[in-house]
Length: 404
Ligand SMILES: *Cc1c(COP(=O)(O)O)cnc(C)c1O
Image (cartoon, rainbow, N blue to C red; front, side):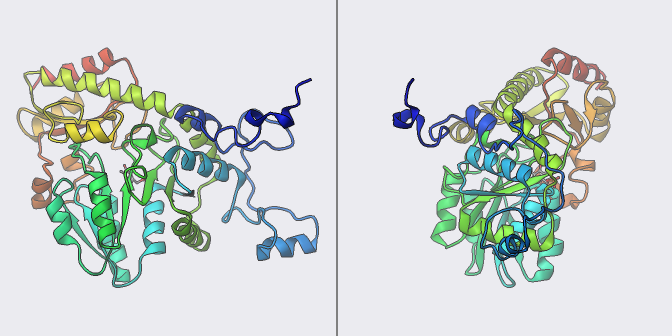
């Protein structure tokens, strides 16, 4: 018999040097006494104590352990540990949605009088959150074009505590230099928050590039099959404890069922992201050849202004692209209405390919001037490329393109 106790290679954390796929499949899992192979779902609101003394110790924190599922839940904890391992973060805090992750991070780390500089082309609701709600609490935000470093620099003032960005941007795929903006933020004692929803840790690791906090809408690629809403904030323990404190008090907690779906989603994350990227790349090249297409926006194309930076900062270019058809709204709608396989929906990050007209949906709430500034023209169409056969996706789009 080999004495494994004496074997250095058998001791310690087996995942200490594990690669991304191994972490995506193994990190965070804890088995119950039943010995289940797959992760267990714990659909319980509260937990039972052995006796009154244990209850008192759990409540006071003298003894670690579960008390109530607004505070901790074993399935949610497994998801938090797994995504933290993938992003290389000290701690993750799961939330009920991506927006809840952004709100909780801002409430936990900011106070009245503080200022945020945010990239102009962030998710529409993120803008609403800053402009309509966080402003009520005395938190000011200014918006700048994500690629214009000088605009970021000039927008920073003595009260700036946070820089917030999404890269690549939606829907034009503009790319922010994370390392350079992290350095700018730190020079002004501010934190850099990156919404890493479009890339996921399979394609981009913002913390390695100097960012302080990562936000995800788990609803998108982390799930990958359009089933559940969820979100997560990740970063250093000191800041995440603040975020956790807010979640516990305010209650936008992730449900254990959703956490389980995300755990399963993470297991295939890299494979899916590479397949999404390969399909999107092929579709972008094909669209460029179509006479009815005026211009394609995809970071994977060497002609895209963000291509070089994206190639340096990301492992691949992701699944989202957009393009302008020749004509205006009429022609864009004709194309969309001619599809029979693609889903007409604003969601993305799904194995099912989705198509949408940004000017009248996702960006419909912007003023005409804001839309023009952001390059959201009436002839722009966004496709979040899924994992169907690429020839079928092309054929579904070709029908409409020949009618323009
Ligand atoms: C969808 C999305 C969000 C919001 O996430 P929800 O889960 O819908 O609340 C935030 N950021 C980006 C980039 C998104 O695509």
